[in-house]
Length: 483
Image (cartoon, rainbow, N blue to C red; front, side, top):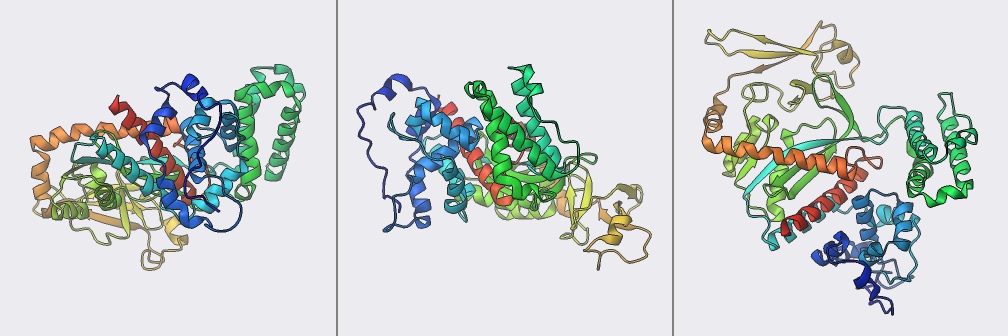
């Protein structure tokens, strides 16, 4: 059963917080900035209102997840820290002497209470609302880009992933006591996943028997992360890879296995919209969604700034219809003037190649036609026919027995004349200089909040991770601008 509001804390020790949690403390400032009562409104339908025991306060549970993101901690460690860290207790609206939750409650909260809730849009809209209320967002431009996140269970074997995690645990222990090498179990040398899981269990057992290591936070953190992975995710480890993740391409020679988060930010570096997709999705196709989400969040959008991936014909037509200036350089390969089967082939601007609907990238391209003749030149992209022969989508795409599979794009397109003129304007050149801001925002998400690797398996888990990470960086940015 859910309570209608947070209960008032009656404790003789509450004044301690004013002594040990200074006004400039990050968590105190976030508490003062955000009215977290919106969590009740969003989750009320997920609880019973007239039967059963009182549930743990959903605001407190939500704040636990926020603390996990801010400090990059496991469930066990964030609960453990809330036992003694007074800033955590203050943030969680706990009495100093109050007992903490069971770590397993966080798993249940994620799976039962946050399921089927559009957490990503909800949290972004909340921070944009705060930023507009504080008069932080004044610009009428958004900058768009995509950042990739590698799947937690990527194209490494599950055994290799467990090996990497156990290695990190051993490494921090050796820094304290090298003699532990003699006590650790013999490393698994087979390719069997079950044997690697068994080794991890034995390693955990040995470490837990050594009471001396309990006082070292860095050992406890690595130990708890390994335990959480083995205990909670064995069912995922027993499949070859994340079932939702897909191969995406960062360039013609480099790829990743995972997801993409398509982001829009204001010129003040507040994220105004985001959408999470699998790794193979085209960046440009998300522009319309990002604009509409930004407007719904409260932004007034007059200009969109992006790279060449966003300059395709459909986006030029959409922004023209909405009377929005599109500051994205035209690329002969990206323009979609007279190409056929637009829905079946997407251009990857990082690799400079087209990708078919099955996710296969062209292996080379060749330009046909000559400039001095009146006919248009075309770029012809060649695909690997060995893949085409066994592709499950080959019907209607690859003709059996054909020696090649190609796709041609006309370079010259009259539809882009107006955009080409705009590209030469001073306004276009000046606004293009703002694009670096989103690169810095992507870097912050990855390097400060662990967004380079998915923390769970599946697209839903990735969306939840994106929601909490973006909520965190937006709050921190708002506080920084307020300073």
